[in-house]
Structures are given as C-alpha cells and as structure tokens.
Image (cartoon, rainbow, N blue to C red; front, side, top):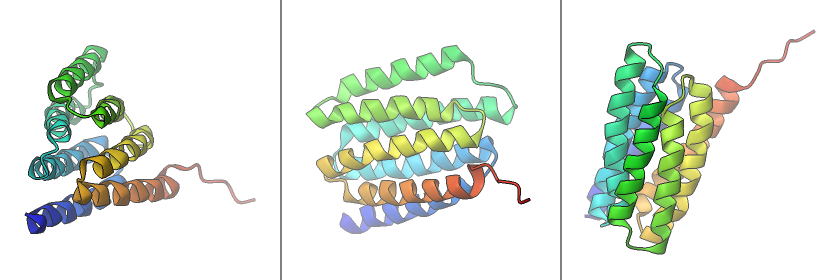
Length: 171
C-alpha cells in the first residue's frame, strides 16, 4: 500500500510541479484536474475520506470551470456560489474529526482559486489552499499528500516570483 501511495504522490507532485509555470488558465485547470485525481486516490488509500470527497468535488468543479475557460467565458458568480455550497455539503457529509474543518477552508479557497481569469491570482490563492492542506495531511497521516502539498507550495511560490512579479525597468 505504501508503494502505491508513494507512486501516486510522485505522479501528483510531478504534474503539480509543471502546472504553475503555465500562463493559460485553461492549461492550469487541466493540470489541477489531473493532480486532484491523484491526490483523491491517495486520500482514499489512507482512509482520509473527507479529503478524498473534497478532491472528488474539486474534479467536478474543475470540469465545469474548464468548459467555461476553454470557451473564453468568465465563470458566472452563481457557479462559484454553487461550488461553495457543494463543497460545504460534501464536508458536512464526511465530517469525522475536528481537523476536517481544514478541508472546508481549503475547498472554499480552491473555489476562489479556480474561478480566477488569470493565473496570477489563481496561484496566490492556491498557495493558501496548499498551506491549509499541509496540516490536514499531517493530522490525517496522509504523508504522500503532505509531500505533494509541500513541494507544490514551494513550486508555486517560485513560479510567482518568476512569472507574476512586475518587472522593474532598468534605467
């Protein structure tokens, strides 16, 4: 079992390391979809059902948002609200430990993250999302996902420095 969770973590981390360096939101959403699928499977294998369900809902939300983004359309506010309500319901269904509240906070940040039109603001919100998943991973004993979220936080931070900061003009 540990080999499988380790393999899923390496695959999720690899895809997650690539994703922050894309500039098109459509591509970022596709990579987030793949990473969430792998992380969801890892949570299932470690019996962290709250995390798994939140990731499964994230996959559904990513599909919906990808449809809008691929057509160069803004995501309607009512969809963002609907995503939030679905995440809240999913969290309440699987709430078993006090630290499951972290999945709710992370999921609401994720809703805002994937609703952005630009990757710059999406990345900033995604750092917050990962920083909330890290303590959940520790408390849930999901060490593979802890590794993934830690590495992704660093990669996203680096990509923000490389891609999103304003370049100062040299005089």
